[in-house]
Length: 332
Ligand SMILES: [Fe+2]
Image 1 (cartoon, rainbow, N blue to C red):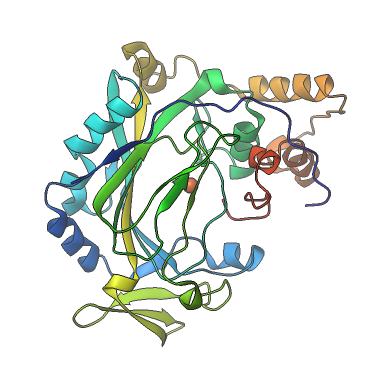
Image 2: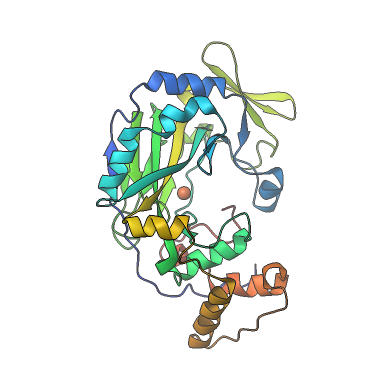
């Protein structure tokens, strides 16, 4: 992307507290056993995404639940964990319903810290099956669609003795000091909102062991070896071997948060979905207010020039606050 505009001013949205939960899972060994049985692991992004964005880092993932459905049925007790559900209710100041929808198992090798960012929020009527990710990113960064937002609770539960490997977050907004959940971490979760609160992963392991992007290829896999050894295998060739204590094992759990019964019903029965006309009208009004010209092409969802114009108008709001915020060319 060419020159970036300054991101438009917008208030920091604080929609939840961050709650630390010790003993996050009743039977952590059962969860770790399932993590072992889930090997080998793939990298979190596609080979193509890494080629577009500076190379792969050793962060591997396996989906256990997606869209509320089991990919790995044995993970159900962890997906339905009442401790996470109750803590999410606390974090969001009460809720009619906390409805888990996804669970992933993650393992990071030694790597540099992530960049401060917010995750991608959800709006009623807009989903990844029918709408391209660039549109959802622009909508989220614009801050224009809060009335249609579906809040999500995120829980990140860690198993890592350190050094590093924690989670840095800005619970009072990006202009206030950050806090961190630091290692050693064992069956410890942070339950919060990651869609509007800035956060980043801390570097994993000592700096001299970090694998720089491009050290491993975009098709690398993480295999479980004998005893407590794990191997990064790149195009069939073992490249790096680690003891489990050098790897950050963690699960990411996400749940819809419905504050009221009416919110749940609006979501389930599509009572207040955004239409594409409403989205384009909101962008057009905002462009006009900012003195920018807006012309809707014949096929806006697939028009490259239009896409670039919209993304340029709504860069990541974190660029206002952080010199090293995630940029539009980064993976999302
Ligand atoms: Fe994130």
